[in-house]
Length: 379
Image (cartoon, rainbow, N blue to C red; front, side):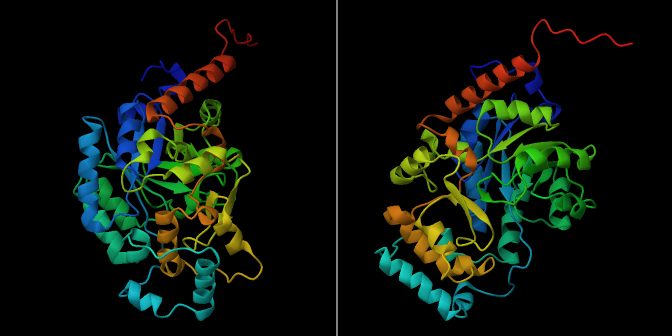
């Protein structure tokens, strides 16, 4: 870390984690997560796409790349997932209308068949799948676990008993009320500007409301954050730090590994502005913010069928999504991305992103507290 952080960045939450900066970075890349931690923040590795037997493997990779620093992971336990089902049994019952629509997309955009086995075309989200992932986390040395979508009180209890800090992403004040009886160590208030699964309330409104409702529970701010001044704003709203995801998609480290951002997708992300994202249910069945593409437009068309709920939509489109990514079919090529994609303008190392965030946050915090500032006298 080449930038000395402003004293205001030394938050209680950061000190509790043993990190220099209150910057948590979500990613599906172990290399990116490790680089964020080495740069002074905390990389949070998302295990959503890892089958249970791969979770220990990935977390071992993360530890090897991180060195002695803390490690963290993100998982999801959405409600209503089918029990006792397989991907094949679910696919056999998919509506004909939806099948025809997907095959028409494949034909019109001339998408070749996929040759790779990926999470999207080979896995069905079930309670058994999530339990297997949880077992991998319980056996690991990760210091912090965040739930991105859903949670269970039992999972939280087991993780906390294993000595891990446990938190959840919330996109609406009602989520805080829903978790009031669940002992969480922190919350991430994620505004609608965020990439991937997201809600409808903007970050500037949501964060102070969640801070107000959370009591003594630390809150991190998320949603469209990719500029250092937004870190200063998050602290001013009462947050103890920030949670970033989109900022890492165009880093050098994200060009490698299983979840690498391909060159065509990188260029699409680099060219995107804050207005070039769209919400779609067409990928997972839940509202997800992505960089705008033919995929988001096709699923928003008046003649498109209503996307199926999770995990049935995923079962419907998994093969096509895999093929689009594998062959970089440019018109349909997309990625979860927040409105903060506007701040990603070049391919650069994670450390450079972190240094720039800190430098601009320092400037913003200095403007708020000039060196010769004297508070007005009280009467």
